[in-house]
Image (cartoon, rainbow, N blue to C red):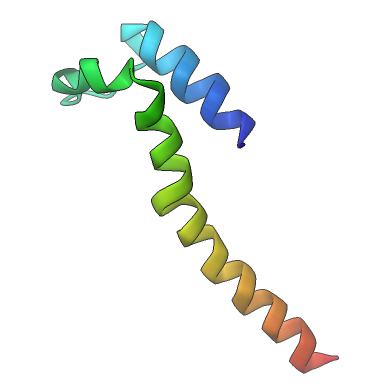
Length: 64
């Protein structure tokens, strides 16, 4: 599990209102749900990270 999601997402942003972005006040209930942050890490976070990782891996293989 991504430690940044745990520390920043579940810790600081959910607990301290001054760290929240303007316009996201309506998401207060969702910020306190742990599954909300885990879902954000798994999808789209991992999916979006997987695409560039595969492309770079393919480029390294082609260049060598």
